[in-house]
Image 1 (cartoon, one colour):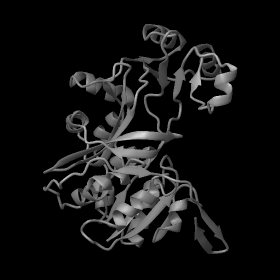
Image 2 (tube, one colour; image 1 turned 45 degrees about the vertical axis):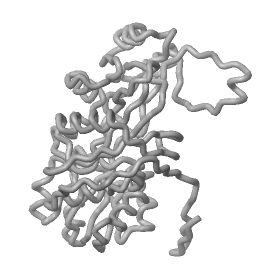
Image 3 (tube, helix red, strand yellow; image 1 turned 180 degrees about the vertical axis):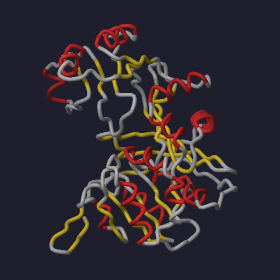
Image 4 (cartoon, one colour; image 1 turned 45 degrees about the horizontal axis):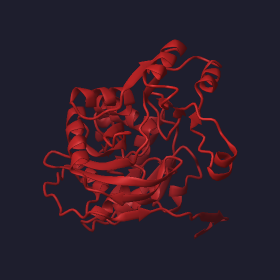
Length: 350
């Protein structure tokens, strides 16, 4: 079985390759990777590598299909937000070449990628969501911030569609003192309203989602949804660095399972994808966003006894899973700093 995983330089590439290579059906697979960076780290562990064009390029799809035909690739598994919208419109284009794209349909991807539309869907389904406003200019943003309690309470500002914490800021009227300066690492995400206005005034003002600040614990839910089965594996994100889970624990909360399954069905998501939630000041878990693709630390769901990524691939290939495995609770997954050295064809890992 020959596969192509995009986003070969993404933080989660090692975990995705592990899930595919160590699948529960003991199927032997060759995994190729693609990335727009020629030195993407995933090429070190892959069976083949494509230095891909950006997904916005008008020859991106042709290049991908030609590579799949040349290398007898039967499925593309996308990992990056930039690519999934393009690939979601191209199922038939690749099907004619004998290749399946493991991604939901275009309408589902567009909804799930938009944080405003996702929050509005949760509201419509009577599922927990943060208070929010979609703003289009300075006046609307300021008004939304004050309606959400600023400056007494922090508020969150972010683009409706983004990934990897790009454009995310916490607006807070917090003054630094000596103790805070010496004992806290600068996170880079907190900013005063006046400072943000000054930044956004230098260029075309963007549409921004202004929402309630959720100060509590954060959770990810790794999901699979197919014709016969839906599985959601919640895990707490106990240590987060640069938006990446460095320590995460399986926590099979029935409320998060229910929220995620309901939302996934309403959106129309399929295969492997995820949701993120955060606790409010009153302890209620509210949706942050949907990730209609493989999540960066989805490999952690293996500890529950489920290989979500493999289930998504099987579903896309017409082998719909139907049996729910016995789930295990409480497993902890921890990242650590390592690296790969490459010089003149030699490679070593630490």
